[in-house]
Length: 198
Length: 272
Image (cartoon, rainbow over all chains, first blue to last red; front, side, top):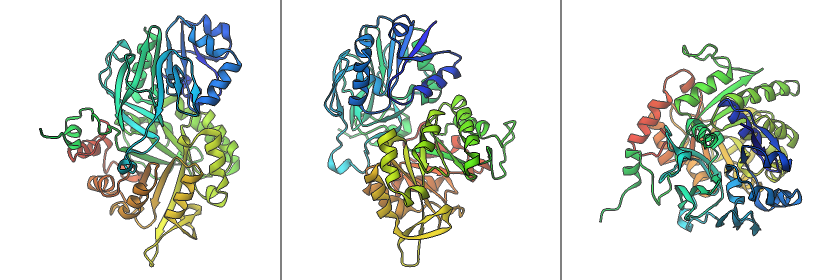
C-alpha cells in the first residue's frame, strides 16, 4: 500500500509519520501532485492557522488536487477544518468537501474560566459511526483546537465542549477527525489502523 | 425532571453531554540529565528506568495523559543529545509530551518540534526576553508554548516569580507575569509552587485557583502532590486543568491507575 501525507506549511506531519511508524506502516510526506493522486491512501494533517494553510495549498494547486482525490483521505485537526466550506478563522474559504462552516468556540461569559479556548486535552467521543471506529479500547481522544465543525449530516462521531460538535466527519471517500489520532494513545493508533483498512 | 450532574456521568464513565467532557489531566514529569532520567527511580518492570523513553512509555501505558521531560543539563553542547532523545521519545510514545529546560530561542524550539515534541516549555529565558513568547506563538502557535513559572509566597503573602530553577528571586508577582505571558501568546501555564514542592503536603491551591480562574488558558499545577486527596483538592478547589508530579509516581507511592480510579470515584472527570 502506498500511503502519502500531504506536505504543507502546517505542523504535525512528523508526528503523524512517527505514529504510522509505531503501527508498522511506511509513509512519505509529499506535495507532489502525481504522488498524491496515485497513492492508495492520503493523510491530510494540520496544526496551524486556516488562511495561511489555504494560501499555501492554493499556490501549489493542492486545493483542487485534494478535493478531487478518489481514494480514502483522512484529514486530521486543521485538515478536517480545511475540508469544510469555510472557516470563521480569518474568514477563510476552504476546500468545500463538507458543506459546513467551521466556527469558533464561544463559551458563555460565566463559563470562560472553566471552558477555556483552545480546548486542550482528552475528551470522550460518542455516537460513533463507520468502521473508522471499530473495536476501540477507549473513547478518549486528544484534542487541541479553538475552532470546530458543528454537527451535520456528515458527522460520524460527536464530542462535547461548550456545545456538541463533530469529532469526526465522513462523506464518500473523505474522512476527517478533529482530534489528534496520532497522539491519542491506543485509541488513536486503532483509528489510524482502521483508516488503513478502509 | 432531575437534572443530571457532571459527577453522575463521571462516575459511570459516560460521555458528558452538553457539559464539556474534557478530562482533567495527570502528567508525570521526568527530569533528564545527559539523556538519562535523574533521581533514583524504583521500577522493577522495565529494563532500564534510567532511560527516559522506557519510563515514559510505561507511564503512557498506565494511563498518563501527557508527559513532561525537563532537561536539567540544558547546556549548549548537550542540546544535540536532547533533540536525539526527543526523536526517540516521539517514535515510541503515543501521547503528547512537552520538553523544557534551557530553551531560549525560536531555533531551539524548531529543532525540538521537528523531532516530534508536541509542546515546549520556557521559563527564565521568557522572563528575561518576553518577546520570545510572541515570537514562539507566532511561529508555532500558542498551543505548543507552555510558560513554566516557579513561584514562592513570601512573608508579605504575595507570590513572586523566581528564576534559574528557583535560585533567583524577582520582584515580579506571579499573577502579573502569568497574565503578561498569556497576552504575549503562552498557551498554557505550568505553575510550580516552591513552598509546596517536595513537601508532599498538597498543592498550592490559592495561587493555582487565582491563575486558573482568571486566565483564559489551562493551568498545570505542580509541587506538593503527596496523596490522592491532594489531586482532588487541586482539581476542585484549585480549579487546575492538569496536575503534574514526579517522585510519587517514580517511587510508586501512587500509581496512575489507582489515582485515576480514585478521582473518578470522587466525581473528577478523568480518562481511564
